[in-house]
Length: 114
Length: 114
Image: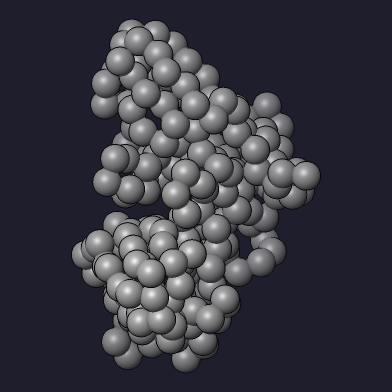
């Protein structure tokens, strides 16, 4: 039933490790996003895909690599994790040519790097 | 570039008090405007939206009016409840653009005390 689902919800790992977060939406949307929320609650866009094509790639270290195997899935892989990567990562989606621009968000994946 | 500025928080109110959270924006053209709410430990939910000047968005007793002359979209509620305690985000989007990304304000934490 969940519209935008992310896994895992919590992730605790050591510096230097590689980890992935997965996102799936069942809303029939064609555009998906990754946002990062820092400890002060500020939300910043990281990436966006439209129909598997990368359309937004903000200033993000190249240790972060998004992958969209199809328009319903958008995964985020992070190499060589650093302390500063600790944050909540939100996936979101929308249909580009319909609606009034609102995004639908997942519940977030809280990443803690020790 | 486009930006959104919200009033600093936290905002602490007693139950049944009147709420105003100020939001102003800088943008080219005619963006759509949104208020999202994030309850503790949860993702972002759309609270209300407005897509053109003078539109009023409303939901769950909250209201906001799109004021182009003052580039503002202030959130109001006549009588807050403890259950309204959350972080509120003002955001804008050019919904018809190719990317459709949401640009968020810094968020305002609301604490309602019984």
